[in-house]
Image (cartoon, rainbow, N blue to C red; front, side, top):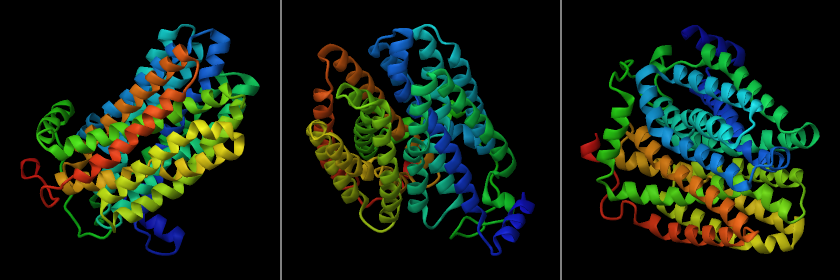
Amino acid sequence: MPGISRAVQAITGHKLHYAWIVVGLTFLVMLTAAGIRATPSVLIVPLEQSLHWSRASISLAIAINIALYGLMGPFAAALMQRIGVRLTIIIALGLLCLGTAISTTMTRPWHMILLWGLMVGAGTGIVGMTLGATIATRWFDRRRGLVMGVLSASSATGQLVFLPALAWIAETWGWRPVSWTMATVALLAIPLVALLLPERPAQLGLAPLGGTRQPELPSNQQNPVVVAVRMLGRAGRSRDFWLLFASFFVCGASTNGLIGTHLIPACLDEGIPETGGAALLAMMGIFDLVGTTASGWLSDRYDNRVLLFWYYGLRGLSLLFLPFAFGLSYPGLALFAVFFGLDWIATVPPTLRLTTDVFGSRDAPVVFGWILAGHQLGAAAAALEAGMMRAALGRYLEAFMISGVLCVGAAIIVLRIGRDRIPGPVEALS
């Protein structure tokens, strides 16, 4: 591994800290997982048409996928401490490759629940935001917020890179080639991780960027499930944990669960083709890449509670505007896409920063994994609720209104985080 670091320096012509190479690899892995996680939104209508499945049953599989994406987070963080980051990522990519490839043989709704719900949900959860939190806290002492902003933006960039192309493939050749495409992408990422990703800076004889050199730590030999559950028990005694959990629940409900899953079908209801809806999500991806990276920079400099107040408040207003945006056709929807895109997951860097301030850098990845579980439980609830409301009422209006109101409520509660004491590591968790 030290030879890799020297080779990178020789190629770039200067002493580029290997932490930035690790960020690039992690971004690629998280981008791949994000693309696979977003793929079911392209498959909803083709599966309805070709296999005659109901939108509610498809939404159930997507809801399970989204819930597992979050619930796997704390266990994934503990697993990385036990067997290492590299092996954990390879296992996750293998699950994603296998699950998406086998899904081309689906003939029953329970097949989608098993493959896209359970298998793909687990795989994406292992390499979700907790991976970004682990890399940011392990490789960086400075610019941690910026790095988490960049890695968080990978989920939006996954939409930017994959969704328009996948929508075109689905319209041209059907839904099965979409699954084969994503299986191939996951497979190609495995050798890059195996060859180029060290476990820690100490393995290369380096210090974290901006920090002092640390001795290489032994792996945590405790059972990852036990570690994660015990951490939940201790973190659950903190009011700040539940405030962060509740606000992130709303974050997931309003983004991945509602817009990420149902915007394309909602556009189809309004006479906008699938490629048009995918283009709107891709536009959000472009602006979220800017917004989330900027949020990471801001989170290193300003009160993160105030940042979250503005993010949730503005997101709520944009969702309340969305039904009117459909009446304005493409100009109104483009305005919504820009506004919502800038705010899509800008909440992640401030939330991780507050988690680290409260629980300490050692425990933050696992605690953040549980907070992320709240995010994805909210997303799963919204994905299922919106699908059921659409099936019952024939429209998404009520789902958009409920989500907008929840965001305004989240804007209020985040101001209470750490209010009764100076933020700092909780002694019981240190």
